[in-house]
Amino acid sequence: MRSEISKINKLEVGFTLIELLLALAITGIVISLTGSGLYALMNANQRSQNETTERLDLERAVAFMTDEIKMSQQITKTIPTPFTGATGIKGFNPASGSSGIKPILVLKPALNSKLKDLIVYYLADPPNASVWLGPRVIYRWGPTLLQNGNYSDGNNQDISGISATSTIEYFNEVLVDQISDQVAAQANTACEANYSVAVPTIADRLGFYACIAPDQKSVKFWIYQQTKSSAKSTMINALVVTRSN
Image (cartoon, rainbow, N blue to C red; front, side, top):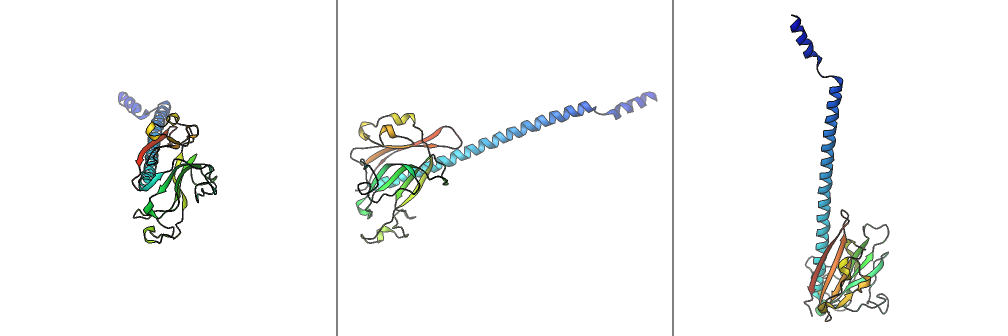
């Protein structure tokens, strides 16, 4: 009988306080490690998504520039200094509040385009307290485009259907954000013989620069984007030949 009571008492004892505390501590550590791993995984996934989005934005900008260069007659190799005012680029009026302005690609439109003024892609610091992250952005100064790919006069009219004397409005718009303000190693490399015109000069190169052929019919350009999720910059470059006369 005593033997049976002893067995029952042992069964009723259960876990000690120390055992319970130890179990709770181990459970807490496991939950903490699981949570940290899940948080790190979510952060890595978010960084990957951000990098993909930024890369796509950069690729779309380069595709847009490439198409417009192809439609142009020339890429101007001599940019006047100063580039604004009576002796500068005709009509060029940089975005309000922007600073550190450097025209890089100045395009002469095709003869049959009805555009009288040059189109300018320029590097600049965005205005303070703007929505742009910077440190620099690439602006485009030119006419807007319609969904059919033709230029608009500024009032949503296709310029192919307007008179030669009609006014065509030009606008400033940010083409791509987060352009690096650091000098990349490759930026110190001189332009090759077939593309010998450097814009800007090597000493002034930052996140957007070009090498233009002497005949002004083709160009190589480079863009370095400083991503939010990485200390390294993303580089993309293109070689484009004009196709219009």
